Amino acid sequence: MSGKVGDAYRVWFPVRNGDGTPRTGLVGGNFAVEVKAPTDSTGGISTPTVVESIHGDGQYYFDIPGAFTTTNGAGQYGWSVRVTLVPVDIIGGTVDFSDQSVDDFVDTYQAKVWLFDDNDGGNDCYAAAWFKNSEPVLAGITVPTIQVIDLSTGLDLVAVTAMTAVGAYFRKDEGTNRVVDGECYMAEAKATIDGSVRTWSQPVGRDS
Image 1 (tube, one colour):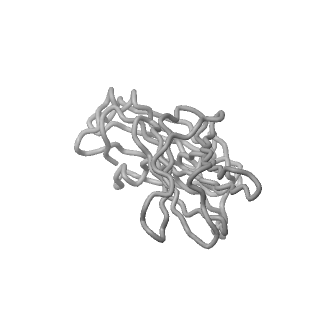
Image 2: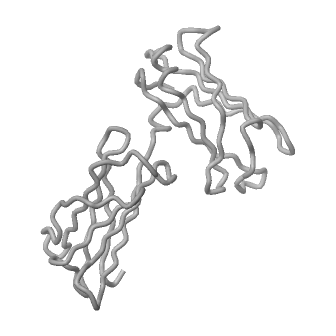
């Protein structure tokens, strides 16, 4: 596993029962995690805590802190990452990530865009929420924008415009360039999260 010095990484992995169904309800004490620096066989070891996904789908993760990679360095050989399952009523086992790239564990960002078209009023309302590794992002989102493209012409219905923050969520009211029946549109949401611009595209329309 290799990566950039100073970056923090979140490592996701699944746990399954013998019949292949997701194993849920495990806690940090059911796992022994060791992250070892590439050039140090005795020191430079991190033992992060494993956390279960809130979705109850058998997915678990642990974080490798940026302070650890800064101190120990990534090196061209990468870190050794080993996850050992501590038996409860399950069979213990070991998952070894040492031959995988950190690209297998990079964070992913998603958004969900909703369109509310008001037949009796004067506005279309676009609402958006952001997610990181399928978990809601509730803070640290800046410069949120939306663009709506008419897929019959390829032109903007709504040019890139700022969205208004409402707590952890965002909205844009549009009273001039409104969607019409029978047409399809692509909404492109953008926001800066964790220091980089994230982009998400999603089809919208009155008939969706």
